[in-house]
Length: 340
Image (tube, rainbow, N blue to C red):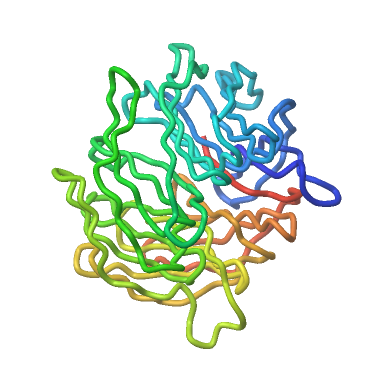
C-alpha cells in the first residue's frame, strides 16, 4: 500500500509518501518506510502496467506532480517531477491510452495534461484548461476518464459543475464538449462510475449528498437524476463528504462523511439508477478524507486526517455491511491510501 499525507500541515506534520504492507487475512497495515522528495502527497495513482506511481505535491508554492518507479514495490525511486501548471493539484489520473497524465488543480480551477514517456516519467505539458465559476471561484477537484475511454470528466467544486472533454490523442489537447451544472452550492467533489458504465455517482461536499447521473458514453452526456443525502436526518451537525467508491459487483456504494466521521453505505437498485441509504459505520477516527476497498473487497481502509490514523473495517461482500474498525496505523495528516 502507498500512503500520502500532508507534510506542510499539522504538529507533527505528515511524511509525504509512505509505503506499507497489508496482511490479507487480518487486514493489519504495517508501515515500512517513507519516501524522500514527495511532500504533500495528497493523491496517488498508478500507471496501467502498475510499474509507476504518480503523486501530487499539493501544497508546494507552484504545484507539482511526480513520477516514481515501483519496479521494486517497497522502494519507490523518483523518475521525474513537473510543474502541475496550477496551484493546489489535488487529483490526478492516467488516461487509458497510457500516454497522458491528467491533473486537477484545485486552487485555480484548472486541468493540466502531460505526456508520459516510455519509462513512466512525466514529459512536457500539452494543454491546460481553466474553469470559471458562476457564483464562486472554480476549484477543480477530480479529473478521470469514463469507463468507455472516450471522454475525460473534470469535477469542479467551485463551479458546481462536471465538465466533459474530448482528449486529442495526437496533440494531447482537451476540447470541452459539455458542462453539466448542478444546483448552486452543491459543491461536487468526486464521482465514481457504476461498473457497467451507464451511471455515475457524484458526491457533493457542501450539501452532503450524492447525485445519481445517467451516463451515455456514445454521446458523452451526463444527465442528473436522483439526489440522496449521505447522512441520516438525525446526523449531528454538518458533514462534508470526501470520497465515493463502488463495489466491483455494482451492488453497493460507499461514501466518507467528515463531520459525522462515518462511512455511509448505499444499496444499488434498478441497475444503478437508484441508491438507498442503508446505514453508516463509524470510521474509527476524525475527518475521514479518503477510503478505498481492498483488492479482495473484504476490507475498507479509511484515511482519518485529523486523528492521524488509517483504520481498516471488515466488509461482508454478500451484504455489503461494514463492521467496527479492526485496527489502526498512525499516519500524521493522512490524505490518501492506494493498493498496488
